[in-house]
Length: 253
Image 1 (tube, rainbow, N blue to C red):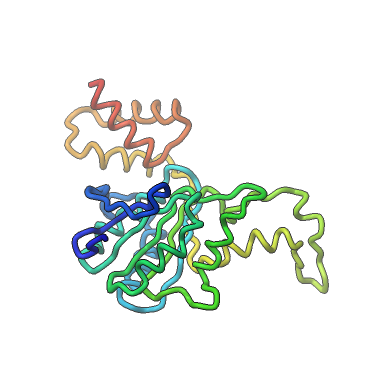
Image 2: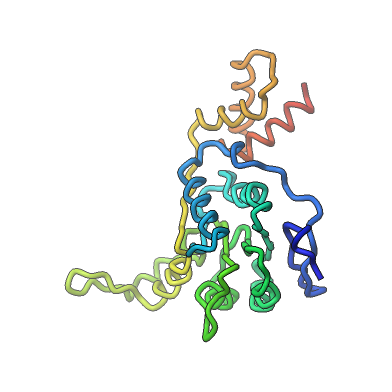
């Protein structure tokens, strides 16, 4: 049995069907996350309402890879764990066990975010159905001390194909979506807070690089050129690439 007074995070392990306490969490802080100020402030406000006992929304952080979506959720834990925030990480294939996980924590005094990273579903995938029940409840409403935060590259979580739109009609000036489209949109609609993350421009990427090299005493122009070359090789100017460049540059210089 987990002592949530001293444990701040846990990961669901399917084979043993139990929550494994996390002994050491990622130390990322909110102030380290650059270029996503609007998304950061909206998620902070939602989380503060949640831990304050006020109404708050489940959150979907979607968009470009490497832009800080998962880091933002981890940083929330480091900021608010002393105020009772806890995080339980669940893989997509373990969504079937959401009801059991929620039952285990619903009566506890802490505030829990159930977190799923890189969430998306394929055609014919039915794992999203238990998630719907947890997000909005069934005959029993969701507990007040549980929210669901997810990150994804997809806005609607389910793949969209051209043929899905064939039965969509325009009637009296209003769009009536096909049943397939309605089913796919209905899942993301259950997230009351949907935050978009876009590819970061070059100046923001270089600002992130500079934050990693705060004590760098060399030529910043040379550093920036190396950082841009690294980004071009890795096909992405984002926070993840900046961190990888920092690791690589330290190893080779």
